[in-house]
Length: 270
Image 1 (cartoon, rainbow, N blue to C red):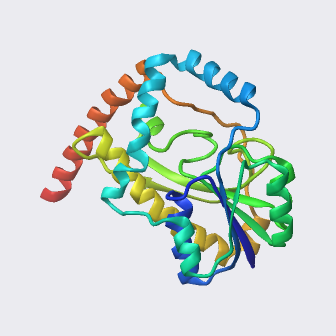
Image 2: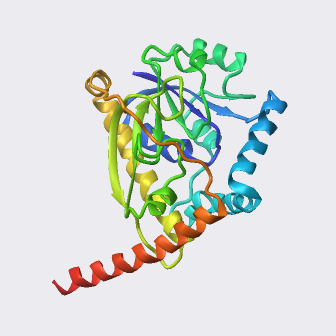
């Protein structure tokens, strides 16, 4: 199967997962595309930013910026992810950059790639003119359980809802964000560390490792999983937490960590 990989980060999920795909030889990677993230419609871009800031508050927005490091730079403590372009050059995989995901340039590049499947790893909204080009469309890895955590940052909203489990979902891309039919879904326990920050970073690492293997599983049994993909049904969408929601996340983290420690002590005694 010929696949293309579309991503918006040089050192994110795509850079982590690509070596797994290369080593497994589960597919032929015909092209890797990196979105530069240029703002095409500045009015719409800043309008959405302002609307989101109003919704979660200035403190929530600032706290959201602070937390971004937990999911990437801090995770490097457990595994350093390489540079996507360097990985492609080393393995002689065609590499291209685009100004934005839904640009005409993107459409032309994907058409010329003549791929069977597109794999989205770490992107925003992808329009139908893009995701419908490959023979089997595009699939996405969402590092959370769907449909319960659509558009959600990994782990933090599970803790908000007093859950000690997180997970990932590999699904078809449709006209909405994180709503497509599910091919594969797996849950993993949250690793409660000495701080919320380390909890997010370490569990994010576990999620990446698990979803990389999940992607290989999907590609190895693609025809069956694609044909039997399950509709999601009604879901719930999340965004960056407000400062009050963050306080609740922190309080629940302390409670869940204590409960996790107590359970570990019981298991060690047994």
